Length: 216
Image (cartoon, rainbow, N blue to C red; front, side, top):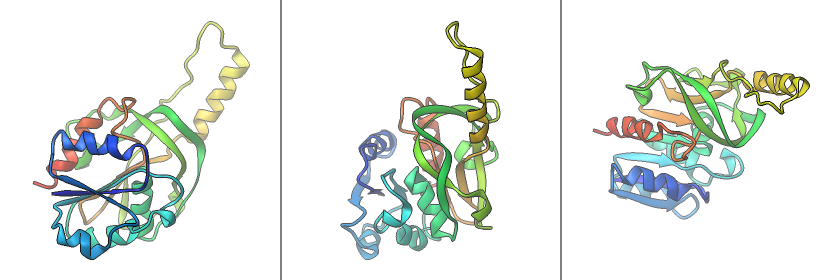
C-alpha cells in the first residue's frame, strides 16, 4: 500500500488518480487528521506528499512524516511536498524569482537520477507555485536533479512588439536555474516542484512509474 498525504489541494485527487493507474493500493489521509503511528500501522511501502496552499510549516504532519519515514520507505513530494522535503532536512524555501501558476516551462533533468530514468534531458512541465527552494540554504544531504532550463525563450508572434519580447526575455532569465527537482543522497526521497499529474507535463506518467519502481 501507498499512503498519500493530502494537503487540502485541488490537485491531490488528480495525483491520486494518476498513481492509481499503476498502483491501485493507495490510501489518502489528510495532513491534520492522522498521526505518525496511524500511518505506520498501515505499513505503507511508499509515501506521497501532495501539493497544497501556503508553506511547508502549514502542511500539518508532512515535515514530521518525511523525517520519520524517509529512512524506511521511498517518498515523493509534489510542489508543496517537494518544499516540505527540503525543509524537513534543514533547508529553506522563499518566494520564487517568478510566480508561475498554470504555466509550463522547459526543465533540464539529471538523467542519472532514477526519477528520470529513460527520459530526455529536456522536457516540459506544469508549474503552479509562488515559493521555491533557496539554493543557498540547500542541505548538504540533498542534491538538485532538475532545474528550469536556460533554453526557455519567449515565443514570438506577428503581433509581438520588440520591447515586449525583450521584457519577457528578461523575465525568463530571472527564472533560469530555479530548482525543479531534488533527491536525498542516501534515502529514496524525491521532490518535484512541478506537477506530474497535469496535462502540461506530458511525461508525468513516466516520472510516476520511475518513482514506483523504487518501491519494488
